[in-house]
Length: 322
Image (tube, rainbow, N blue to C red):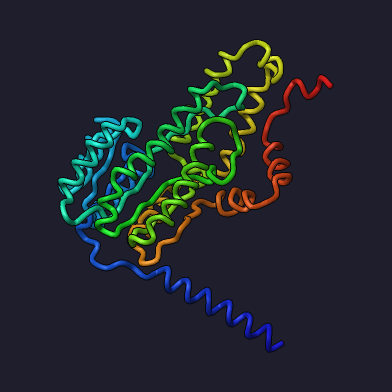
């Protein structure tokens, strides 16, 4: 009996120590420089606004002039926007040179790699290589390229790098380029974290579940699927069945309603913790769906993963032709 009491007290003590450690903050962060990509909408847009209010000197990378103007109109004079297409290496180099001139000897305290796209999420045999290329170029190659060009400034400040991945970087539950790109982000993040430890640079990865953003807009996702379906050759359509698209869409929409997180500030709070905590976490799993379903499922045997995920797909016509 005494053993179990001591064991319980030991667990409680460790948990209490971890919570106290997790709440410790870095001091004197007001006026520190941070750079955020993908600030037109969604997580990046909210993060830029919140961090601006908290006293950071924010560089907000926006893809469009409209996004940059709208963000600038609702933030302080201290926030600066810059047009950034993470697919364009020359653009990235010019922006990095501009940031270097702005921060000078102080360096860059934080880099938040948030820019990303979904791309088509459909069976692999519906796609060609170009469907895979763009999500990988934006979500992975662009993220790596921005990081490499900003890294000297981060090292100078002994700052933070925050990479926005996804639970889709742990579990691929559909075809398309999004999931390979996010698995790549996870690998890059882990190797970078270990490489930068000797320089005092902290590297964190955020793994959101399904959140209500422009990225996951059901209407846009279904419109893109419909375009691809309509261009499929007759033999592929015959294998899946003419009613496959409607049935699979209904299943996906039902799952989306169950899993969708509406409060995107949860992701921004994780970004803030990663930038301000004395001991930031290596990984942040965000969203009820991610914590209760996707993340636990990603750690289970493949046979269990396949059983559960395949139940959410419509049956193919060829499965009846045995």
